[in-house]
Length: 216
Picture 1 (cartoon, rainbow, N blue to C red):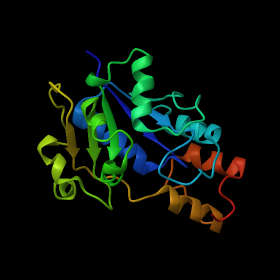
Picture 2 (tube, one colour):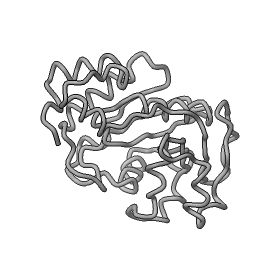
Picture 3 (cartoon, rainbow, N blue to C red):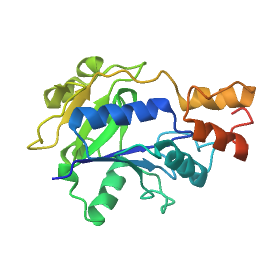
């Protein structure tokens, strides 16, 4: 049976940290495919600096020639906020059994799950693969989210894990690049190089289309 995961985000722009989270999740779980889902209208944050079309294009460029990675336009067709619960609804409507799928996410984002729409019910709809970020390691999450500690399972970075009998939270303590989209936008506005923070094709796209030149 094919193992799939979905990785939603604003990706404004996508960077090496995002790709590291996806790759760590892929290796730890033994995923056959991980789908990046750029959010047209992201919840819980300000309006993105780049349009949905630009962010989708950058995600597609970032994952090209990476086996097992794909980009999905699932959230491009809606003008409503891309809540995780809504994304799961759309996946179900498209024929995906979310109970057998995984959502990949950085630990810094998962730390805020208590503020998400339809929490905690959405934890029973799919499994989460949570990967350490420089500002938040997964080893801290049991203390930060004590009510969820019993659901959490530590996973070796080189995996793969056995198929879960029911939705769970799988913690992967793997290194990921210390970069943020906010820092990239700031550097572009200041005229600083970003080639070490994003794939070369993404850096070229940002330059060609004049993205992020004004300070936010």
